[in-house]
Length: 208
Image (cartoon, rainbow, N blue to C red; front, top):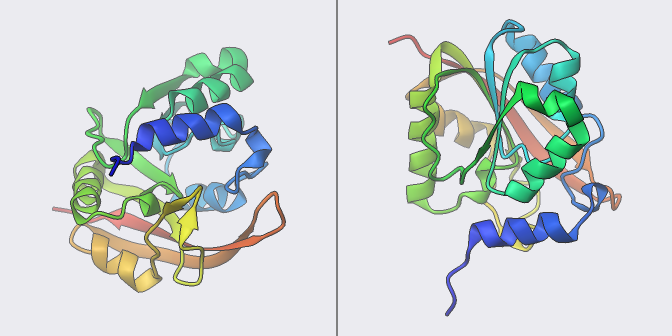
């Protein structure tokens, strides 16, 4: 049996599909923007978008005046598409090609954002590595924002099985390191007019 190669899978997706041909496409990532705005972080805060791909979140953050933004994704193709779209503005962004399950940042971030990357990690070891990475890489009192498919959401995305979460499950998983601020359930309408139910939560890093 062949071993699944996550990176090859995502490179193929971003090579073969246009921006608006993927289910997670949003012309304006309203929920993410609202959560980041409500977090209270400054415009000079260190922000990282995990699994950002060619999302429009980075465009919106730049427009709102945020100046220290990192975008990480497993697909170099996706990041190159975002760079091309941004043009000269891309030089203002730090770009990292990495797998979220193995990512070990060298910086401390004031805000860590993840919409629809974490739920692709289904093995306990991958999940534990991610939790440790988040805990170690967010500054004291920093913010963690995560959006995953809810327990009423899809069981698969892009032909890959995902792990569904509830507010309670996310809170318990990150509770050793974070205090919950807010959670929200919402439907995302895909470009194909189907609905995907998400749970979004924001957390604040506990003081040591």
